[in-house]
Length: 141
Image (cartoon, rainbow, N blue to C red; front, side):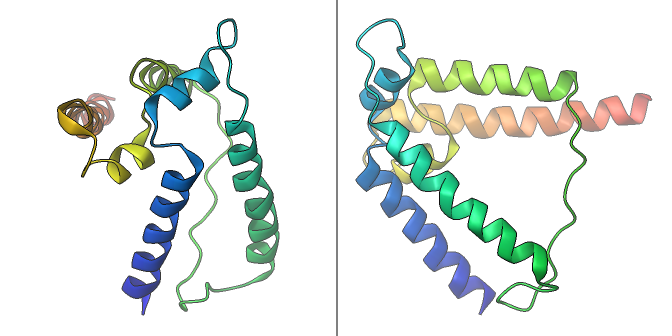
């Protein structure tokens, strides 16, 4: 049941990214170009994502288990540290330069051409490298 819910949710998310224009790198870069030809239309995508999640988090906070019967994971500590700031800056820079973030990169892998494939490989490589560096830092501490 959990795999079916995950597959349906992932498919719906990918379809939403496609319909909203989040897989169009030019549209995303236009959203981020505040001092050029700014395209504010992705603000509606952002609002359309945040508002339902506010409701979902309120409902989830009152429940003991998810709809699939699994326990909810513990909330992370609200810690703002160097790792978070560095990761946020790298994410933002990559998003602005490439016009992709992880969700749209995966959603567009079938039609993104060579550039989309290179981005996806680089993104996965960065995730693997980040995990390895994090484990080394913990072992050295």
